Length: 389
Image (cartoon, rainbow, N blue to C red):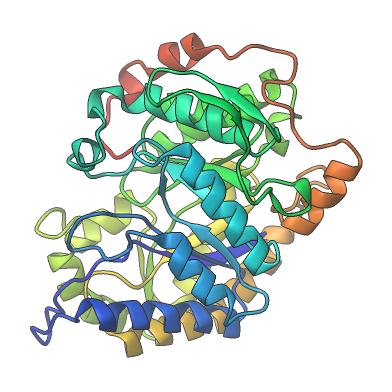
């Protein structure tokens, strides 16, 4: 299993001091956090993509390449790469380049994002969000697997005899996670290609994500990639810890109450009850996240959000020390217990190179054509929940 952290790159006033960091300060702090994640033994650092204040991360691959040069083991990913408003050609080029400069320590998470105005800013229509995601990824998938591409679709100019450069490292494309908060079509897309499905379950009750993940696992098997238990699943999470749980609640409450995403909404206690947000002692966090597979099955990646809402760098580094020193070692042991041998490990570039040599990498759809109707039917009332993707 892989454990790591993700950041949404928000620049938010510290409610306890009234101070807001500059963009330069926040960017430097994020790089420090990523490097410290490796130092405390975490596996993954993931960075979001946004094009509007209060977020700074408009060019994740640039930042991740800089971090790659200063780390040795850390796997560098995105918490969202906007498949709807980025050109698939540029995504193909940027992430293949990141593969090369990082020595294969990269993958990416595709998403539609949570900022409606970004669509017209980049010449797209938000009402076409799902068709854009489907078509753009079909092109991206092709660009990484064919040396010369001819392409014609609805949303970009045609390509004739086009070669994306550089080619993927070792002729193995970066592993792709399809990130979703609410959309069954994205679970279907991930299943069709045999890619990973990342349920960023930080906003809604577990029952909602159980339905999405179950759909993905069923459709993964339908397309011939393996059993439902062999599907590749990632989960989001959110924690704040102190040795004494009362101290954790008291310290985190002003940050929660003023957070740009959920501030001035539900109480901290209500939100923690409904979602995976865990504010308390390290043991409380261990117990909470060790129970995740009871709801979602054995899975491959767990990412935590720990650096948002104006939390100062010193506090974030302290949270990383607790994660790396106490929480993650205990979770590695707990989640390894009784893990079936057929459940795959988290994907890495080295493992995928071996799979490619054996002819074992997934083929899109197996022998079956995509069936978007299945996802449409699965939506029903169960998926009538607002969210980003």
